[in-house]
Image (cartoon, rainbow, N blue to C red):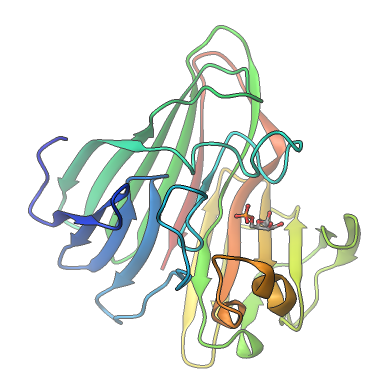
Length: 279
Ligand code: TA6
């Protein structure tokens, strides 16, 4: 491992999984080296945890960690029965390439053990760059280092913490969305955007700024390089059927995912970056 700056120490999440805990003048954050999975982010100016992490999240390597920010790549959603949903980099070890304390933030750069896997033929270099400061920047860069063009999908599948999903409003989205539970039928985005049941929607309006409004606070999410925002809450019945989610866990979370779902084509030597900024 590289030499760590003063703000970072290694913590053990399980026998298999180490994480990096960052504590700098602006924020606390924890990042699992398994999946480059951000588990928590709390800016110090308001001491409010921005991310939801399931109390029953598994750290045994059997599946992706439930909550935080899973990195979905090189596809989004299910591909076919043989291949795991949301790609294969969220369930592999990542390596820390660099970590530095800068004036306004701590910056880390990570890469997965491999970008090669069944279901993807591209030759790619993948980097996740995270800046922990008064805001958190999460930037996923995909570089084509091969000689053939490839097309990929991806998502920063962020689980945001909410006090109470029944008193949560998502602001900033409009236009048509495709509804997964209703066989991808298209509907107009509701206004106000409130939550009363299972929600699993791909909004093809790549708006840059949305916010999750709760009674006393708002979390602002800015997105760049995306073609969609995905909004997900499993609600009660599905949450109850999940081994890594409390029955009531759905009341404390809302996924707002900065995503490429329509396929982004990357030419040789080109880089495409998906960025989510959380404040
Ligand atoms: O992003 C929404 C979604 O694709 C849902 O359809 C739901 O399955 C969710 O992600 C969680 O997927 P996971 O594979 O992490 O259980």
